[in-house]
Length: 144
Image (cartoon, rainbow, N blue to C red):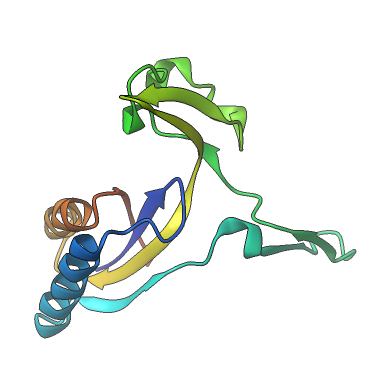
């Protein structure tokens, strides 16, 4: 079965040298085990272009149009998931983490496409991926 691992972050190029080394090691292990189909990081959302040609008008919009509220675990004082309106789209949530102000939106910063035997194997691998990249990882199976 193939799965998409979406890496969720609130800024670009945020990986520390240690995280990047751990990600490279995980990629090598997944490749050696025949689990990694593809992996890559993405440029900042503001570099995106969104095309909407659903009505044959080819509306071109600079920037990404899919984002969500910043994760509540990103810093103290942020709202719980129940307090965040899921329909907020690219709403910005602000809070504090220690002395630093936490602000921004969450977006897709990278991805893996993996191939494993079942969902349990995918979830186990996603737990490791989240740990080494120090980001949230969303897991979705590809439709058959």
